[in-house]
Length: 526
Ligand SMILES: NC(=O)c1ccc[n+]([C@@H]2O[C@H](COP(=O)([O-])OP(=O)(O)OC[C@H]3O[C@@H](n4cnc5c(N)ncnc54)[C@H](O)[C@@H]3O)[C@@H](O)[C@H]2O)c1
Image (cartoon, rainbow, N blue to C red; front, side, top):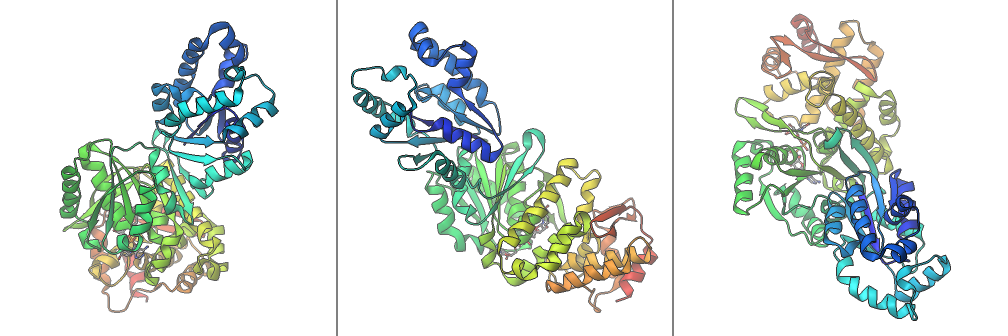
């Protein structure tokens, strides 16, 4: 993220910029200071000795240079925005914030500072400020947002900016070099979507959602976008896993084509994993790939499907069989959306969080055991566990984006889980519920293979139960149906059934070929 502060002299660009960069751990650059250090003299002297034109040329070069940087706060000289190239350069992949102040206050601040301001070395400085402000106002109003700094301190201004950009929320970065992106997690994050989208300078925006979720949040999301002059196209698909297919991908593409969406447009996936997966897939294939932002509204999507760039749709011959690896540009997770989620869906999301505990973080597992009430009441604890889950997934994806190895551990509980979903026609269990059963069965398998302690397997089973998730394969599902379903799963490599098995809570191994007899034994011992 690049934050650019513009505004007249005396509006606090430097002090606010320093505060912001300190709070964010970003680099801070003041274009005037950079020019002064390179020229070896103050701006006032450059103006006097070389003239304004000379200074503006230096300024343009410096702006071009710093515009290419990331994770940076840039305070610009008061006149930077007079040049259109500067405005374009600064705005590219950055948010421009205009700091405002009244002329009287500007004059007072400048006089208190005591430094030399070449443009104000006139008879009536207040008159001059008024004149220049009127001249520059149309330029300043091109900024993405503004903050009135009249009666607040630089620190308060910085805080306001952080809040406007949801940078006061919890942040996780998925580190994939030039394709890195942020996951923003917090309350009321949805309201900040409009300003955050500005960073991408999309030519058009389409919100893709479904007919259940969109009506609930229609007003909030449209206001969040309209406030920043974004009028999105809204593309709704029916609600359900069965619509995550080619037909509805084709429908989304058709709506984009009808709306003349070009390569610089952007999609917002607003919904659960189904909407996220199909929107990502549509984005990755429309005009050979356009950008998309995930706004996940189920707990499962918030901790899992919105992160990592696996997109896809189902085929009659297999679930998620058609898809791409295609990373979003941003993930905006608003925990308030979980409030309207059906209870079962919430628990299904918890199953994936338990999964992260088992595969990578014993402390997270302990936390889930000890903080059930706080998590269920959606207090700060839910933010904590969502963030931790995203950190784990982000770390794994950063190391193995395309599942060449390590990423497979995210499939813990999924080998049997998917098979149960297939054997029951995807009707009886939610994905997370099937994963919960699968995790317990994989733990049992690890116990009979003598790689995992029985006591630990019992802890997993009991935690799954605490969160009202199923932990046993129901009697009326045939073991051979489950094994058959496993054989056609993607996780089967060269006819061998692959399992992710726990060695201890917080550590798993990839077991490439597990004896079918042992699997049968576990499936039958219910
Ligand atoms: N891409 C990945 O890495 C990945 C990972 C895991 C799962 N998935 C996919 O995710 C999908 C499952 O996602 P899911 O569990 O989010 O299911 P879902 O998208 O079907 O959502 C579940 C239900 O909740 C409703 N809903 C969503 N948000 C709501 C809200 N805030 N308030 C009220 N209702 C709401 C939906 O309309 C739906 O009826 C599957 O297709 C699975 O394959 C993908």
